[in-house]
Length: 142
Image (cartoon, rainbow, N blue to C red; front, side):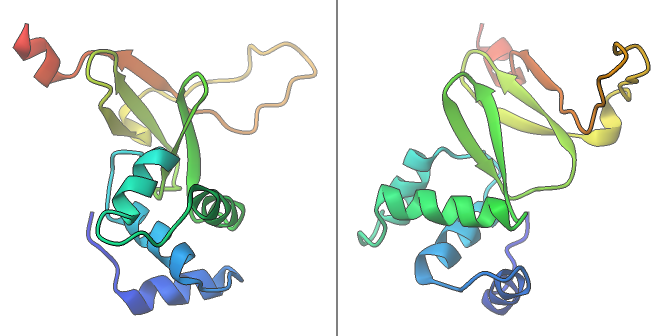
């Protein structure tokens, strides 16, 4: 994923009505630069690697503001573990049950789910498929 320029990130944050703080900028820029769907703890380690600048609470509040603005999404692949993704377009996920790797699956790579068989009264708004299994690195290691 190509990293947007500093100006592009600032413009995006402002266009969504967000105040551009150093921490909010750092969290969003970090998420844009990666595709591993990090947890808050992973972001904390990454952002404070060279100089402690962010607390866990600050990262949480930045993530919530970015999520509320529609710039990131929260991904729940495991019970009780929130991960974050800067790709907000509809897509699915593959989750390796051995090494924990997460990989995006394009929306069109899986069949469309039809909701016409849902019971009367249920109205589906969205869905996402999580494919669980073993990645090629783990199956080759066996």
